[in-house]
Image (tube, rainbow, N blue to C red; front, side):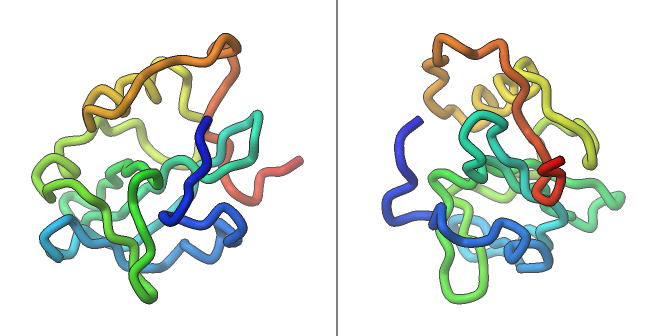
Length: 128
């Protein structure tokens, strides 16, 4: 996995993102970050679940290539694309297949590491 270089800092406590507002590429509010998902192997924050307010559903957004702007998260995608992201519910692991669906949805690089069989999406705070 490549470093986050200049986007969401890997040294930030992922739990500190919870409760922050998220905005799309045009500055339209998406919602509030409910959960942050970490890569099981590296512990690097990968996804945020954003409460959109639309039917109280959460939309998963990638933390790379998103960036912190002040106290908010700027997600470099259109609000409509974000709201149409696959809905897997929150509070549980994302399977490798679910994460792959999210990567495809956002058109992100899906070059898979050789150990792709591992689980992704450990919740911040579930280190045990």
